[in-house]
Each structure stands twice: as structure tokens, then as C-alpha cells.
Length: 346
Image 1 (cartoon, rainbow, N blue to C red):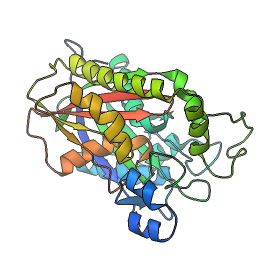
Image 2 (cartoon, rainbow, N blue to C red; image 1 turned 90 degrees about the vertical axis):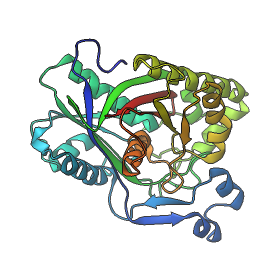
Image 3 (cartoon, rainbow, N blue to C red; image 1 turned 135 degrees about the vertical axis):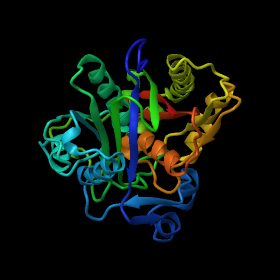
Image 4 (cartoon, one colour; image 1 turned 30 degrees about the vertical axis):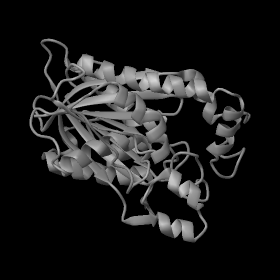
């Protein structure tokens, strides 16, 4: 998606925010307590995971949105669209988390919309918001939020998955027509939906959440997938998808592969071995000579739907980007979809 076609107003990012709760699950403590074995901990490569003892995902999203509004000098009443994305349980069944977020940030003039595209949720939410801005001139100030909490007993943040450990937290991003500290240049996505089976496995369709298993257990489903012999094909498609989505994001941002302004690429906050074996090789093969690849997730864990916004917020907090420099925010969600967001510091 080319965010600002010719003669269209640019889409600015007024502010980006990561909010994490004060709790921390330190990996050495988890190993000592027997909650994760040393080999798995080493493969995952996290130092600690952010943990919420009390707040659910939408409550944390409200806190992130309140902070991002304050940073931009906006009011909730300025917003015309609120898009909330998530991966896991939002605290209530049969209920609308996006409306809760809009209500509690005072966005009474906004249309709340929910996006549930697993770990790729924030990229999908940004695509939706930009599309609405392009289609409707009355949609001019948008908030994109994410929020996830991976609490027991329904979820084991260390062992519910093979190559990912999950941290709690929320993000928020403000989009508008006009200048901002950052400009959104493009959002590119590619998908391979035949691999939805990886997280479904051989389980039957159930009538209610966690009817098949009392704890979310993607390891069981991924084991079925691995035993099917499809893993090498998936790995090959993943590598091609990563390269394709980066190339597409650059092309739609009118940037060449070796443009010296393209300075950073942030990786999804998944396990270290998965990043090293599956994501770094296709990125390195592209030949982005001026690029520094950043892994910013070792002290949080995977933040559900929010990795890319969290990475932009960390780039901003660290004051890493000089004016004119571009960052590529790479993400992936099971299903599978890969996205790359191109952002320029103004």
C-alpha cells in the first residue's frame, strides 16, 4: 500500500507509544523455578518478559493511548477513528474491546473498529486506518492501539509455543493528514493462508474457548504440522515472503534497495533462534548495505499484536533516527501474513 498517492496529503505519525506493566518474569528465575528448561530458555533468548498482574489488554491499551495523546497534544475528542488490534483474550467474552478503548480515552466522536489478525494485528490496523483516511475526508485523526495479556492458567507465556515467549503490554500510534515527527511511507503485506493449519493442527472445531485444552497449546498443533513434512516448504516460503514484503515496502515508498537513507530494520519480537535461522538470512541476502538490523524484544517478549508499534516507539525513545532516515518495521502473524512498514523521520 502506497500510503500517499500523488497529489494526496502525506500521512503523518504524530506519536507512537509502548506501555508495559511493572511486572517482570526474569528468565533465570523462571529456569530456577522449573517453569522453563534451560535449553528452551537459551533457544528463546529473552532476558525477561513484561507481566501484568491485574490489567487486561484493553486496560493497558487505554493507558498507552492516553500517554500518546498527551505526547501529541491531542484530545480523545479529536479522534475520528480508533482501531484496536489484539492476539489473545481481552478480558471478557462476547464484548467489544475497541469500544472500551474509545470510551475510556474520550473518543466519543470516533468509530471504534477491531482487528484480530494475530501477531500481525498492528500492521493490519494501520492499513485499515490509512484506507479509511484515503476513502473518507472526514476521517483525519486516527488512533491505532494494541493490548495483550498472556496470563495463566489459560496461557503459559514460556511454554505455550515453541519459538516465542509472550510478554504483556500495549501500544498506541496516532495518524493524521499532514506533518509529524514521522511520515508513514508505505505498508506492504503478503500472505500464505494455506499455513493456517500450523496453529490448528488436528484439533476439531470447538464450541467454546479452550474446550479442547485447558491451556493454549500451540506446541501440540505445531508438532502435528511438523510431522506432516510441510516444515521445509513453509521455511522456504517464509524466506521468500520476507524478501518480497521488504522489496514491496521500499518500492511503494519510492526507495531503492541500497538507498543510504534506509538505516534500520526492526525484527518481530519472537525467539532468537527463529530470528537467526528464518528471518536474518533473507534480510541479509537483500543487500541493504546501509541497514542496521535491530532486535528490540529481549526485555519484553513478544507483545502480541503490537511488536511493530513497540519497535517504532523504542526507536523514537532512543532517538536513533536522524531527519530523513527511514526505518522498516517487519512483522509476522500466524495464518500466515508478513508485513513491512516504512517510516521516515521528518
